[in-house]
Amino acid sequence: MLALSAFLLVCFGLVAIYSVTLSGEGANWDLLTRQLVAVALGLGLFFGLAFFDYQLLQSYARWLYGFGLLILTAVLIFGSSLRGTKGWFVIGGWSFQPVEVVKIVVIIFLAYYFSRQSRPLNQLKYFIISGLGVLAAFALTILQPDFGSGLILFFLWLGVVLVIGPRWWHLALLLVAGLAVFLLAWNFAFAPYQKDRIRTFLDPAADPLGAGYNVSQSMIAIGAGGWTGQGLSLGSQSQLRFLPEAQTDFVFAVIAEELGLLGVLLLLGLWSLIFWRLFVIARRCHDDFSLFLILGIILLFLIHLLMNIGMNLGLAPVTGITLPLVSYGGSSLIFMLGAIGIAESVRLRN
Image (cartoon, rainbow, N blue to C red; front, side):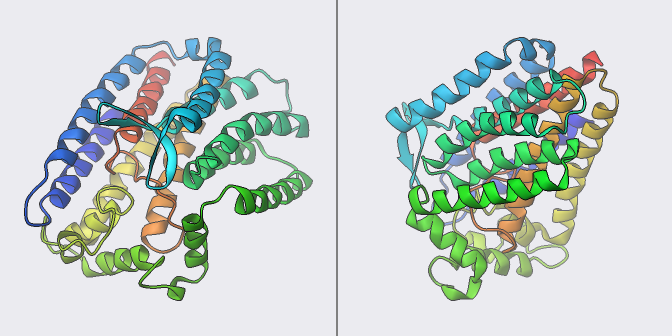
């Protein structure tokens, strides 16, 4: 059920990308072709990790963590800039975003670290040490600057900490530290367009034809969908290209406009099945490492889902976060399928 739901979501995304491909005077099949290649690679990674013993990830966790920091450092030196972010390796016309690997690496790191500590786990020293480990990856990501992916890494750590159950004064310290990091990032790391996105989120009407244009068009598209939608490839916002980044950041708006509320409910229904199956796997885990692995995968999907849908509805700042398994983007799709493969490995061996 888990793998089937994920595969259906991938098909959902291919249909949406196909629809966006038809917009304009001449159809450009390059996006769809590249996404199909990513699907093939992602399925290969899924099956490889599903039949791989997940316990071996625990043995290589420190090496994987070091590798993650290495590629984040390398991309700052040797990477290419796309959409204002120096976070891509481009080889032969194909791009690869290493932070997508690091998201999985951070999950493995947190599972490894907390599974090796003595009880109780809600000790401040554990939170600080694990937080410093994630902070290194967070800082390298913000320097690209990739605010959205940096938030994903932070919320992965925060979600694990909240599930463990911190004391109230731990949360107070976290709030102060979070404000300090945000102020440092605002003054030294955020690009001007990222600051504009945050200002637009706080006041959407401030610049409706500039920084707020994307969100305005997204909300118009969602509202135009009604119950049953305008029909596949018939949405005015996406087909007439009023909606920017329709295949990536705002693919949810495309689905809502063309397939309506029924299409959105189907999309969310598939995600509900995935979360249900992951919770079932978590309940059957026999060791802390596998439990924290599944918890991290749940958080990864949930954070991506809430942030992407939130920015489509104007409830979160536009940060370039994809709709997992649906949006166009090879790196994201491949490693999201890899995360599903890890979950299947845990299920098979528990």
